[in-house]
Amino acid sequence: MYARGLALMVAVTAAIAAANAQVKPANPDFERDWFVSDTTNNNTGERQVSAFQTEIGADFVSLRITCSSGKPTFFVEWDEQTFPDQTVVTFGPSADADSDPVDQQFVFAKATDVVERGLRASPETTAKIIAAIGEAGYVRVTAYPTSGVRSVGMEINGTQQAWARVSRHCPVRKMAMPPK
Image (tube, rainbow, N blue to C red; front, top):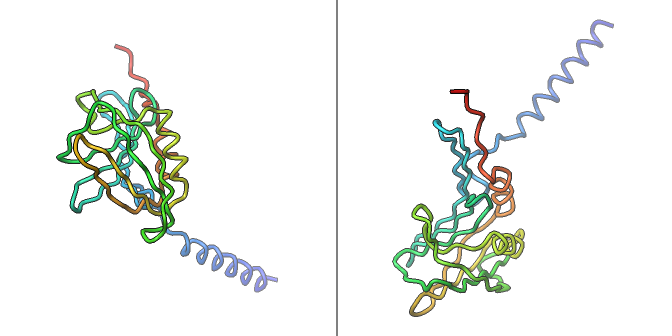
């Protein structure tokens, strides 16, 4: 009886060890292709979670989902481009770079807050962009600056996870402060 109990314990321990060996810890700095910044202000206790995507090629383009004015908001920053106050930005999600994208147009406005850069979608438009991207692995982004048309393609896997992570922490919540 002792031998059977010992054998069972060894088998269970081996099964648990095998299961744990297969589970790899998630990297908290990424949601697949999205880099995630998750910080807490030591003075106020505010937690800010943002997700970033950057393409460095002929242009420097950054996509960002962050909490702005208490709601998850999508930003597009296109380096060295001048945009009118309102700009149409087209998102063409597809399975990969070789697939035909399904383009959808969205209206962005120039960010006016000093800490927000680039073009800003409304929270309602942001939700529509995230829904349009869905589980696509690639997206072509086309913007219409003051002169000409600019387009870039990038890997976009993990968009839904990045969106969910930012949304969970928006609006930014403050930790309780001790009485003065």
